[in-house]
Image (cartoon, rainbow over all chains, first blue to last red; front, side, top):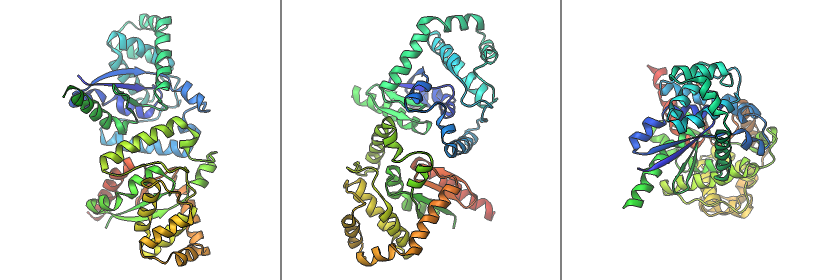
Length: 204
Length: 204
């Protein structure tokens, strides 16, 4: 089955749009998705930014809210900016890294993005994350302990380093087996078509 | 007829994509297009950039070339980066401002973008611009003289100031009569649909 790697950051507003639709869209395209949470902070830092570009460039930030609101409305999705933006997504990213290995990564990711961008909650809060885990019938205390294990921390660090090596500079991003990079929810369909087509070509 | 204002900057790679398709796409949507050349330089400067963001952020620049190459290929369009990037588009923008008033603005704009992004020429060169004008059967010397008249310079300054007031921070951008702003060639279809729909709503 053709494959697409989905790179997302928990504080990223446009990642929310892809998180909420990628499974259905990829299934329709016959493409298997690998979920790769990573951290944009270190990448932004190397570009000289200490916060989200939507805070660094306020006109861009105002436009982003308007743009996502329009798209979310069309898709029947609730969207609101959380009071704290960007949220510190480190704990969520470590939990998701653990969850991807355990099989509950996508469901956890969707629930955290909904908590943040539909309910406006601060996902750096342990309480918010514990509630999400509880809703998924997972043992929150156990998940937190395992998410802080050195090998999970290292897996997240490696994902961030690999993202940067692949030329990723924002989220969501999508990479294909033959090395193509796509950036932005508005490139998801092109990325899926390429993944499916490249595979078709390879097996022809 | 519903109306859409098309804001473009001559050094903008993504503007090339819209310049080459907007007339046909807008006609199919039943929308009338107002061409508004403006300058991104002063807007970028107010954000602390002295060159294109694709030079400020090299990873973004490399991605942009790949992204546009893929899209151009799909559309049967030639794309190559000019040796000098970003080009100083001031003369081209003044000529286009004149041309929009005279009726040859869109044809001139397309020819200049093709010279730059299909042939790789430096559009800050008088010779390149004179050749484009000659191909359109226009009197180049006369056009240059009239493009440097104070009222044309002022019209371009006013367009740039209005762009900034409207929250425009990149190109291409599209604005509708009811005040919506769309940024990027990938938002052209949504902008046209909104312009056509808003009009339909207004006349209902």
